[in-house]
Image (cartoon, rainbow, N blue to C red; front, top):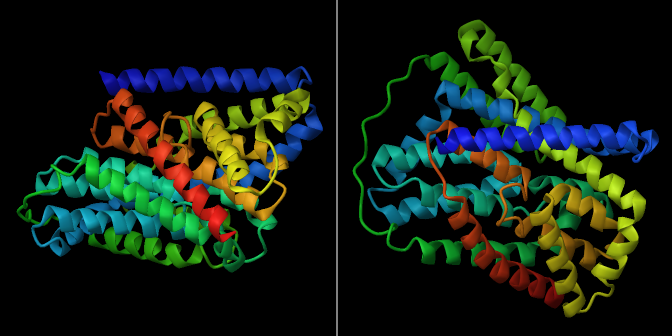
Length: 390
């Protein structure tokens, strides 16, 4: 019932945003040339989301996540705390090298299936996945779609980006893990029994899908356009499934709702920016690279991400980040801050879609309450660390 109600609300919100965006463009409130320029900038981002989601869905269908979950359970040696540490490490590495959206759609089913297999509550592990998908997304350009939008202003290579992001990124991850471990400390005690291995329906499909995912990981940080890499992986899996399991290919492989919400927000925020929002934001965001100014900008970024979505929030605030330190402070707000509202990041929307598909229910009031606590701690700590090392 709750999942069905959530889907209905999401559908209504998506349709409303897209209709509003269509009206804004049709009436010229957002001029056509500006609309085309916006599409040219965000199209690779949305294409990457489509490609990586298809890869995740089909890899899950092939049994890749179940096999990986059972392998992690073995490495956990029956200790819940060790299993927790493995899940944390998996989420951090996946986010840093593959992006937060990849973690939301790839790692979420792994940890949920893992918890279900060993008989422990899946929600703490799932919450760790979505929190770290956001707070571990500061390290590399590929870690977050906002980073891809900002990368050309912080240098042309991942190394130049990392030179600014490593310290606040590490602090953000450490603070997140500390809060999660404290909140779920009772659930992390005890032991579990290893389950029997799940029978493999189609070993050829499983091995092929696992190889595609494994090859995809380094390719996403190779310097090749990430949308092309994810698209190639999706095409390979679609081709194999056409041959061996055609019934798995369906329109729901594409995250229509998340894409619709993101595109609608992009258009509406861009129109508002052109119609006077930028001058208002100039008064709100302030200036300067001192610690208080950086905290101010990060706070505005976090509030804007939770009110709108982190991608349009970054785009609308980017003109007011006129130095590498201010760009990184803005990224701290828009990357580490979206832990409160369901729509704050595309990763959270994708994560919730995966949870619903896996039959896991979520209390949004609890999610938002814990998120407020995390943001109040994590964002200032990461920003102050940036101020110390910038």
